[in-house]
Amino acid sequence: MKIRFTETVLRDANQSLIATRMPIAEFEKILPVMNKAGYYSLECWGGATFDSCLRYLDEDPWERLRRINAACPDTKLQMLLRGQNLLGYKHYPDDVVRLFVKKSVENGIDVIRIFDALNDLRNVETATAAALQAGAEVQGTICYTISPIHNLASFVETAKGWKALGVQYLCVKDMAGIMSPKQAYDIVLAIKAATGLPVAVHTHATTGLAFMTYLKAAEAGADVIDTAISCFSGGTAQPATETLQYVLKEYGYETGLKDDKLREINNYFKAYRAQCLASGLLNPIVMATDTDALTYQIPGGMLSNLVAQLTAQNKLDELPDVLAEVPNVRRDLGYPPLVTPMSQMVGVQATSNVLYGRYQNISKEIKAYVKGEYGRAPGKISDELKKTILINEEPITCRYADLLEPAVEKARKELGSLAKCDEDVLSYIAFPTQAEAFLKAREEKRNRTVKYTIVKTES
Ligand code: CO
Image 1 (tube, rainbow, N blue to C red):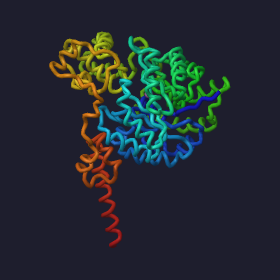
Image 2: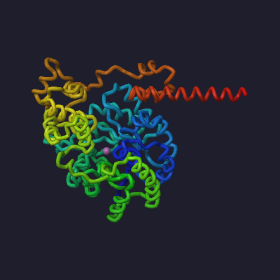
Image 3: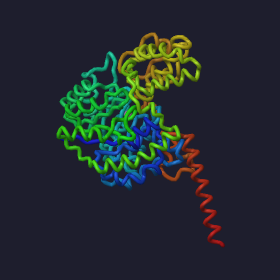
Image 4: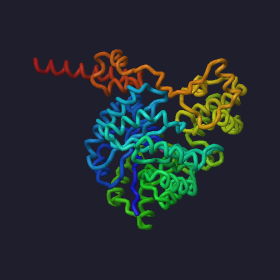
């Protein structure tokens, strides 16, 4: 029996516990040890890391990836990609998706975990084809959710759809930490039987289910589980690597992990965790168990967003009504899984419905969703909502990206001499304001260095 581990401390645990604020300076020194620890892969890029590098950390995300790659020649590097949304919140045209994926692989990514928030596989086709062509392993992702229309059969259908796209791996992704051990067991068994593909399982420790969920997933034949080194584990992050290694080893699984290396990695990150606690960047509350998500069946992150939104408007007493409204909005929208960006969209609409009356204000994102710009809703969108939003317009039924004009050359022109390579152009397309500011600052720094060098030569 074999099971392998994907370590998430550099991406998902970093994102879930400290809002992706870990700079490369804090982890670069330990990379050679992580490289030799026997992980299946290191999840180290994608998700919010790209945005955070440009926006908060004054780092070039591509440069970060190249440095991780240089330090980790023996372990696969993994990223998370939102299909046609790449790392952002809207659909990009195909030329952008193709170039972004190609450059990710060229700069060091080996495994790309691709998902679409609606499990609409038309939104992952381009990214998947580009990744396979570039020689990457694709983990075709099934977003797990609980709803009246999602069940074992629907997850198996999505799994088969992924297989038809030619992926080498599947992933069951539970972004909310609400997948129970029983559900995990049944799903892993069913999708392996239906596709014959290896399966990775991803969950969060938020509700306390995760250790049990992984154990049952392993019993059902899961090939990879996502865990975080213990001092950056638990709560809204993944459960601890060392604990699962201990248990699975006892049951006779070969994991390939080296205990002494795990200890070294954990000891290293302890110092950084202490810093994060002292500065307030790490709030101990996010590391605790919170079973509210089981009650409301919404992700923990969404719950804290709702609390923050209502607090800002001095309306926290409306929280119970907003929580009761979330399932109604979700039903009206055809039960989208509550993952980025749907979780934010549903939360904002539910809040607005409670505060200002049902659908009195409709966000432009919800309008776009009902028009079909995010893809196919998993279930049926309410007729009333369609009538209100579409009026006499017909919704889009094709793949939305087919309607988008190519954007790479246009962005290259806009940037002019600021862009030194394709990677710069892609950063700009993904996050225009942040990337432009970053590239300008880099240019100024370079000009200063050049002047300084010239002065020195002349003297
Ligand atoms: Co996650």
